[in-house]
Image 1 (cartoon, rainbow, N blue to C red):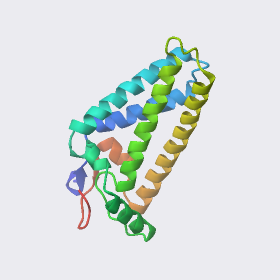
Image 2: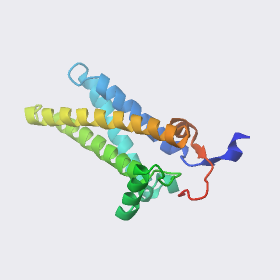
Image 3: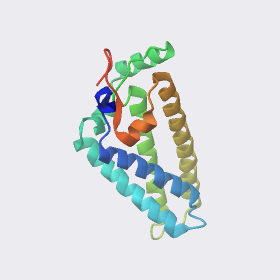
Image 4: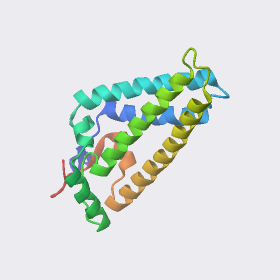
Length: 182
């Protein structure tokens, strides 16, 4: 039976948040605010609600959803990086120290992107050119971060021989082994 060899990590709300945020980002990139301003704003509002949910869930959600699982100490992070460089980094069932930092960076980037978009539509703002440039710059940065995230997931899946994209669909990862961090 497959469940006997797997371990439940990502709960349904966490997975739903992840995929909804991914979809909202993709929609906001392909549904330009210039061509479809109402739809672009609507997707931005959904993104803000998703981020607000994640802030609450990161503080009060289950073990692997908590921000304490994303933020590791400097020493643990540096040890993990050294292990990566030598091909023997510790396996984490939740986020590794680097993937946790990266998840927080992407969440912060999405928050800044959404806030700057909201400010562009605020009464009296009239679409300030500087704010528009800032919003677009953050959008381009987020595209780069998302592409890096996808590549990192593919690389980690191959390196660990574990389908991480499937784990984000099913919530289950390979059973912990000796030395793994729960």
